[in-house]
Length: 344
Image 1 (tube, rainbow, N blue to C red):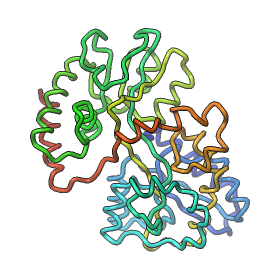
Image 2 (cartoon, rainbow, N blue to C red; image 1 turned 60 degrees about the horizontal axis):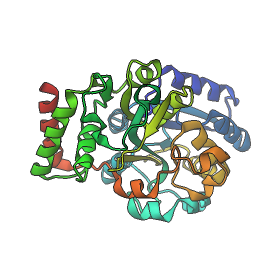
Image 3 (tube, rainbow, N blue to C red; image 1 turned 90 degrees about the horizontal axis):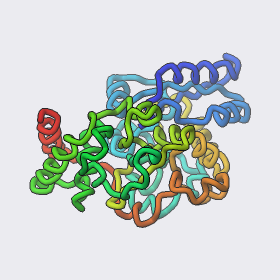
Image 4 (tube, rainbow, N blue to C red; image 1 turned 30 degrees about the horizontal axis):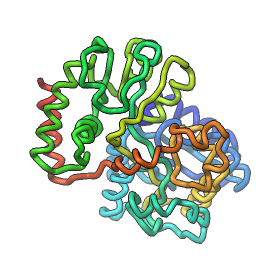
């Protein structure tokens, strides 16, 4: 998710650097591309008489490797929850002073209880929730059934794509079979493999990059993709629509964390608090098209988004969806199956 061209990061950094004088305190963020509303960043700079510098990463593993190798100087990082767990266990994060982040009280308790790594919110505070779903060309396909089983047909002329992502794509097959996408069962994984071998015969390719442009241009009729990417395209093309599989989907959440050694910890806490202000949070949701686990912020969304599935997942689908978890040694089971699927 969130794979936008790297030059946007450089542009963001230049915009932020030019906003304040060189003598002002500097807050350094390490985050995903195109993942913060720069108007809000500028507002924070003006309010706290500082400058904000944004660096970008395109995978949790890239970020982790840089920080682990000694990459320092960042005040805030936004890893996905499973990576937060790894970094916390390796003492790479420091506790936050929640007295400086009173807006953390708005994070939905139901989300904290079910999904948050840190139930106290001292090491990590949820930022945005994303998921992988399906976009399709309704002009070409008409109404499609709300199931991952749409891949179980050859009637679309192989103009479909699945993500080239081991956990996302195996996870979709597992959900289709009614299993957890974090299963460790050899039997359930073998069944998912058979499903994917069928689906693979009906798709053009496994694809992480070109699906967005492909569905927009009409090259593809149906794609599995990440929420933010897909909804940006949908907003520009009335022939497209999205589908949330009734079996459930993978969920992911990126969190606010402060790394050990952050030069401006208190300013970082002020920035997190500023972005958690419900009105600001809503504005940021509109910009990113991801969903913050904050009911209070929903009140500030435009009317056309307040109850839209683009922002708010239906309760029945939310209950069937899961966070992708780090499975430790059992990750090897997924790697083996994925290699076999790709080699077939």
